Length: 511
Image 1: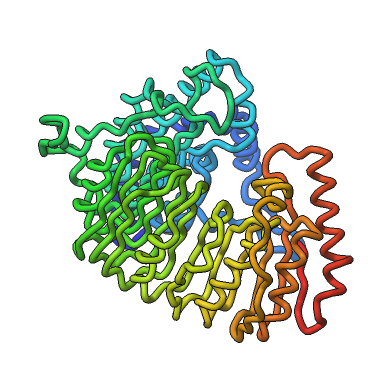
Image 2: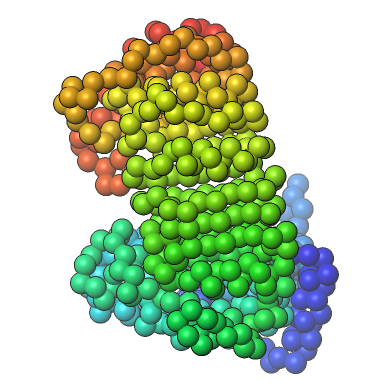
């Protein structure tokens, strides 16, 4: 929180304390009645006993935090989880209203709750969702600061709760929020299909354009109206939407009307088909588009964008990048086959690119493909097919095109059977290609024998190699006996078989 904002909160707190009766209670049901009785009893005992006796050789216990200025105390409380911040109201009269001026309102729930939530019946899920809404409404109804730095909601909510979510957005914007996150987890309550990764677009919360002062005049045109939230546009720096159905018009309205918006992240949305980020007036520096499978057009030009991340199933039909001198980090991961020559045409315009992450695991290698020259590339992450020589061939081509590369991350994936390669054959034998700046290599999803060829090629060709990090294959989902055995076998192979092949001058680390 900025200093002048802290001073504003301090004055607001003092004014509120002077006008409010003493009523110590926590909206988050913290602490419980038993704890409150214990605290009250302890206070009475201290009052009867008088001043605490100083222990021999020790300083007396003094509450120095309460003696701090209001702005410092509010800053400390703002760093606490919301439940803990609300619980401070029972400590003393001094702390009764402090939490109401917290600069951070993060309504997140822990993973244990979500693990239990997904095992409930639909009626019980609905009850939990409504309890969550009541908790959020209770807190924002008691919040008294004129500004907040962060507002985040994270729960399984869908279109049925549109009215509540709309009111939260208006609350945050009117409080001149700097970081706004609407993160709604897997939406499948009404669909009859259960599973943590299944999303039904029809049940998503749809962000209404009217909240921004936009109204559809026709199917193709938007009418601009006055918005009660317009006061917040000047302060918004970070905007994140997850499982929120949001349109291109809405996102571009944020981009062109929020003069300090630097980070935009959109994940798992159904209506987004295109996005245009163009013009020096746009402050955006970090753009993240994840699992927006309807997205088919992204145009970026004449901006100071620093980082671009795109990850989805289908390739984007129209990807245009031009005049982006500040763009140094690009992550482009398409789970299906992509038009690599067309991508290279666009990425070659990023002359200052320092970090590149690509998924080329399902692509055949084309020996006639011309790679652009990555003169400034320092970090390269490639997801490749582990059982085919084409993965090695792609790695070799990128090394040739990136003479000053310092770190290489290889993510090894297995998508097809070995019989497939017996039919199509292997790409020609790898040529010797020395590299003089590569210092660190990380191999992820290491499975053992079939991955050794990647490591050995790098040992023989990377003259400056100092460190190799091996991360064995692991199941990120439900652990089974078989997956644990695979991970153990891969780790054993790395530490016993691979270690003998690695020169002593190179550090080998197995995670």
